[in-house]
Picture 1: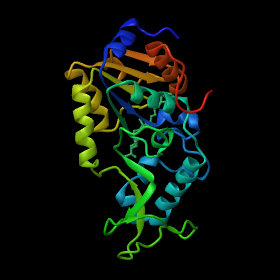
Picture 2: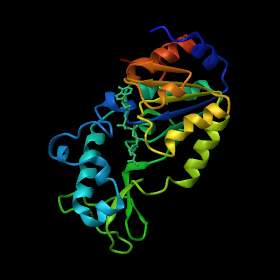
Picture 3: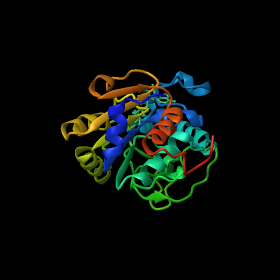
Picture 4: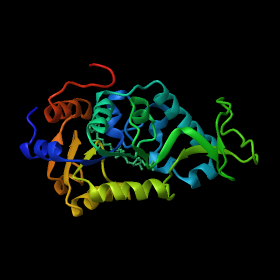
Length: 253
Ligand code: OAD
């Protein structure tokens, strides 16, 4: 795919690159995006109505089981070429920050290390009452396990609607956006704050902002270029166009 010359030039000249990813970067790993129609039993539920502290307090077992279902989906998923292209990007630039809204852990699994998980990670659980983290828990059909410290209920270590983003991760994300030479937005509908404001912060800082998405988003008009296509196809091709090298990390294919 021919990329805009300015995008290639800016990425070749950049020393500081920041990337914001959303659920679209994991779609080709078979992980449903957040706002895709939910499948099976979960098709009757609006995800935004399940991912709240109030929903957990009203029906802890329902919310726990929904995350248990998503954890099982993620456990059977593997990073795709988009994840590996971002690992290559991290190794290519002196300063690279990957900011993700995803909770599936696939960036870490692919090898990304300068990674900010703004919305937490579905593989971790913590106590709804005392906040103590749980390394392991009984994964059975009995709903949320008890906290070993206080007996309260365990909950997924993810950010729910109405909850704050981990402050250190958010500060680092804002700092990376504000000084970026190039800011990429990959596979996000850009509707959830504060993540959705990061591209505008990058623009104000003078960054070249580009988007990769299979469809237009609210962000598209803000960007210098909005590439239409799958992240798993466009990102490896983009890195090859920028570096002239085939993918160096992760699986081939
Ligand atoms: P969404 O489901 O809102 O959006 C996924 C985006 O990925 C859409 O814009 C799709 O067009 C795009 N997409 C799908 N497949 C793609 C592919 N193969 N390549 C490129 N793009 C693709 O998910 P997010 O934007 O991540 O937060 O949602 C952000 C946050 O909203 C989530 O982290 C979640 C939710 O509130 C919390 O739960 C706190």
